[in-house]
Amino acid sequence: MYNLLKGKKGIIFGALNEQSIAWKTAQVCFKEGAELVLTNAPIALRMGEINKLSAECNNAPVIPADVVNMDDLKKLFDESMKHFGGGIDFILHSIGMSLNVRKGKSYTEIDYNFNQKTLDISAMSLHRVLRTAWDMDALNESASVLALTYIAAQRVFPDYNEMADAKALLESVARSFGYYYGVRKKVRVNTVSQSPTKTTAGSGVKGFDGFMSYAEKMSPLGNASAEDCANYCALLFSDYAKMVTMQNLFHDGGFSLTGVTTQVIEQMEK
Ligand code: NAI
Image (cartoon, rainbow, N blue to C red; front, side):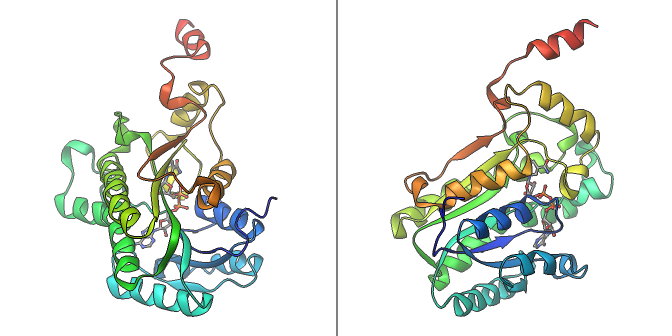
């Protein structure tokens, strides 16, 4: 460990269980010297799993917040700032939920009410989080905000369904708000586009296992794990990345720029 985040204070959204990318990121940030507040939707906290993570992170407070409820978000920032005795240095937005996928509706037959909720929870929620921080002036100078995304925002992956549109919107919000927050307070806002990863959200995608092994064969470095992603997030929260903003950063072992690999060609020739 390098003490990359010594003295920094951060809020981690989305640690559901030990597989969650947010869970691993909280562990790395803590080891790198950060103080944390953990948050998730009230229903996700009911299982109580997160208390294990909190105990590992010096009893980090666990504050419930439904990310589409502005009152919850205000309370979260308020209590976090009281706990830290000041402003916040980094935020991880690690949240995704597709109602149409859950209800088994394909892309060509989506229900638009579900779709609105999907876009709100998975994408506009980043705006809601940033807006709350903006209104409360909760972020310190040069704070770093990251949201997790997927390459289906740029290219078609059929079973990713409406989440592709949600991720495209999420990346756009990161760019747009990143502009305003950069000018106002040098705050950085980026998205990390992660390899397919076996988690609760990931496994919700149809044909996920086949898809994961395809991505593995299509990536010169192989798929990036949740642990690798956590390390990258910690780096991006640190001062070493303080001039990086409004970017969509691929963390995918090279998948995004690979046309084909010999492994895939050999497989096709069989
Ligand atoms: P996960 O299922 O562990 O995390 C998703 C989190 O979103 C859960 O903790 C859940 O409680 C939270 N959430 C859902 N609705 C919420 C609400 N209304 N308010 C607050 N929190 C809410 O799965 P994972 O994979 O760790 O997902 C984290 C992020 O990474 C998501 O944005 C996902 O789309 C993204 N991602 C995941 C990939 C994968 O293959 N697993 C690949 C690329 C990106």
